[in-house]
Amino acid sequence: MKPLESLLRSFVELHPDEAARAFENLELIERVRLFKTLPKRIALTLLQRSGPHTVAPIIAGLDNERANEFLTGLPPRVASSILSHSNVDYREALLSEMSPNVAKQLRALSNYAGDTAGAMMEPRVASLSQDFTVQQATTAIRKAPREALHYLYVTNRDGALAGVINMRDLLLANPRDPIAPLVQTALVAIPDSMPSVDVVQTMREKRFLALPVVDSEGHLVGVVKQADALKMGQDTAFDDMQKIVGAGVDERALSPISMVVRSRLPWLYINLLTAFMAAAVIGAFEGVIAKVAALAVLLPVVAGQGGNTGSQSLAVVMRGLALREILPGMTRQLLRKELISGIINGVAVAIVTSAAVFVWRLIAGDSTIACTGLALVIGMAMIVNMAAAATSGAIIPIVLQSFGRDPAQSAAIFLTTVTDIVGFAAFLGFASLLMPMIV
Image (cartoon, rainbow, N blue to C red):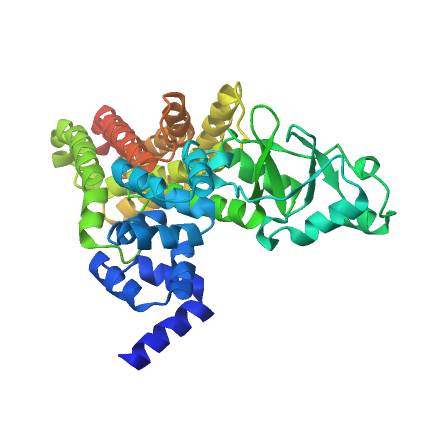
């Protein structure tokens, strides 16, 4: 067991992110057993990089004293996130046994919604008083904890953010001079209520190492670090990717089977319902399909092409919503663009598809009129379905967002329903109208 423990510790020390991912993929009983073998320093590294949904059950299995020892050793933002995934009574019991300052800090963080700047900020931030001299400022910087130093933020007597000082200007100034003339008041600060997606976008545009966070009264309450913002953006993108297809946000590649079933099964039932709806459309044209077997062969072609078109539109619109490229009032312009592009692409694909179907049926021995009729049917159906798919891929996430729902939540399932039903109805409907030509 000794060599194995040594190997595990080396893995966590040398590759902490990979170790955290492997740790998350273990069953709970295995995570607990492994956690107990690690020294505190290594365990803290693992806790800090693992998801709160993974860590919370482990912390809950410890006695309060031990749990508080780990929580106070973590950055406040991480500890607050872990506590938010714990039972309310248990959380209050832990907070009541912590030092007042730490408990106050964690309670303040827990009051922020999970998708705001306040929830993702680092509350430990050092600041300089606007009344300091250069010598007092440099002394304060030396005494400040390293993890609390980001930029040299300056606050007034009320604690409101006044500006920032360039380190070079401070070092070159006379020690007895006041720092007030050195303060640059033009700086970017974000409110603690700003949505996390806007924080990520601001960080991407400004390219700062950290952004100061202020409350409603302008007081400096923390900073959002670039690494945390980038990680938030990455996590959000992966979460949206999983939600689009109906997988759980917390699910990982090697998550427990119980979690996989619990998160996927409800959406699979919804998908089954929509599949029956598409099947009902085919059933309504059962007599048409019975007369021409080739129609059954070509059905997947129409539906598949519509699905691909809709997925392209969906991906572009989802990106536009995430990056705030789609502003209020632009919906009509967006839908018109997607409709026209869907029609143009539909016509281009329809020409190739119709020619291929014509040659295929001609080789199969059908008459020229029958081949022409079948080519017209699939061509017209392709145009209709691709136009509808492109428009649906744009409108589905916008409609979900207008109802206050996550636009990524299983949008692909709803899109597949539309493309299947419209594709089958259009293809078999046109076939019914042109049946005298086809038969």
